[in-house]
Image 1: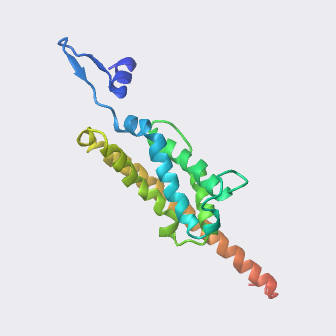
Image 2 (image 1 turned 90 degrees about the vertical axis):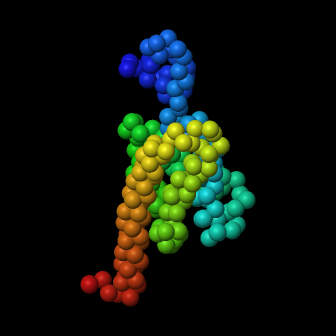
Image 3 (image 1 turned 30 degrees about the horizontal axis):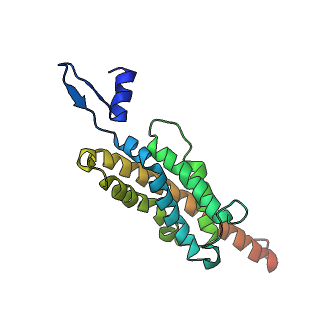
Length: 186
């Protein structure tokens, strides 16, 4: 199959098959997710933001800007980059940098790992809910496993990064306690 016909297949367009009859090609799950990106992304970012809002209720209704609400800004900006990595499986997009930014923020907030990273796994349900509105959910039963696998991969990387960040914070705290009490040796 050449590039042009594979593009037609990805877009879900109708084109003649070898017998001359017209065939409707199904959308790939990644194309469908891309088309619903604004809605899926906003719900996912909201789920990530509400977990940190529980810790600091004063920031719930503030504008989301780099300086007015830096935590929401970090989450939204980096969640979008992670989402791009998810929906473009063939591209060599960076996953670790945006994950590090969110994990650093979560580690500083002193969340338990499950609380800090739960929002990553909520993406599975958000995607399923949004795709359920379409009529092709049965056609994606195999492809959804690939999406789930990629989300699990995001989660595993995030747990590694989060635990490294937590270890660094505890190391800094321990060194500060030693410095305060004059126990530098040890």
